Image 1 (cartoon, rainbow, N blue to C red):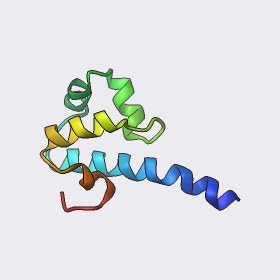
Image 2 (cartoon, rainbow, N blue to C red; image 1 turned 180 degrees about the vertical axis):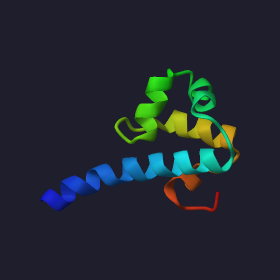
Image 3 (cartoon, rainbow, N blue to C red; image 1 turned 90 degrees about the horizontal axis):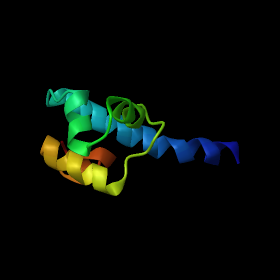
Length: 79
């Protein structure tokens, strides 16, 4: 049961890690990501550290800003 609880948090962290990694690779600052999503710097920080999950719409907007397919955030396609 504990293992399943830990796994529930894994996907959010993984997506956050992918978004952060792709943004760094493409040299897009957190402030730019926040602006893309129309959220505060604190809100984007919470999403990037995995404490708040990205919504589907946010992932779509980020994929457009970072010029990758949404699947890149899930490790499905190469960024």
